Length: 495
Image (cartoon, rainbow, N blue to C red; front, side, top):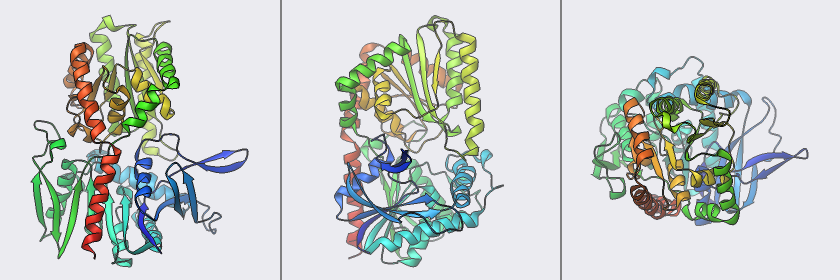
């Protein structure tokens, strides 16, 4: 046990691909997103390991090597694979995480269900992750746990290895007390999170929500607050907060509350879209879609992403402004969920039915208003679609951050365009030069689309240039340095 940083995340940091009957491991096709963002930390420590699950048959010994060394663009690093059988994965991820926890996180209590949930299995899987992490960690190491489906890992780690420093990062929203407290496991979850040395959130609203939950359920908690830092200062928005908590004092311990949004890779995206191949791909997208005005929306199938609300708004737009017929096209990329995600199958059918109805009503032999893709596009194709687009329409009903909005800005590189962004996306706290919209409001959605379509060229350019400057400054490297500085505080306090 000599690893100074242990990353615990349910997903493996690579793709398993079967080629000629042989399974090979390769770097994910997209160099953007949360996986490469986390992997970037490997170059900043001497030794680190990633703990993830790997499926194996129930009742049999794992027929794969538990610990492997990967070599990719991030260098050499070790991955410890935790064997989970199909039923454990189904209960831990597909049922408990998505049917019980996900609706709560995104403040949709009406969709919350424990009908099929077996909490004991969820707890057991979290314990297995904790044990695997503890086996790898050096004395006093930092264990960095990621996301809500591993909520119970910190408490198990604290019991097994009190010497370790435990950090936790929420990739998702965190709800207020009135929603969080509907869960029967709220005390167990909260006690585990309070076992951490550091809790991370993307924006002040979510860290403040957590602290409100903690103070409401536990006596003797003291909060230390400061004004929200400048890049996240907003007023009058749905997610605006005047102050943010920096630490909690509880039972003689200080818990660091870290609030900072993850960045993207503007230089990489710019290089892709401005390469010879990228310029040709962008031109081909414009030619193939044959649209005077191209609107792009990229997300996955999930009721929290607001895709059906978008389609309703687009339907209203075509009714309201018939002069757009034949001129505007919506490129809608909404990636299907993995097998076993029953909670999203109904949502996908509704999306497909809406697209079919709109195309059937407005389409002609030479023009369809919507092009729908439910399969993931290669990274190069996606960023070139952003570059080709006139408008990016990113309007989730709730989102922890939303990197798509930042990727669009990076792909445009200060050139003319409009970002229409939901107030309920965490990135709206930074990207206030977007056209911000309330996706729950029909009139707000209609007004935002009209404003984006009718915006003067000079204003489009000025807004995109300011957004580009922000995304460049607060990129993934900035976020990495910020998190490492917080880890340094944790290890310093343990000396």
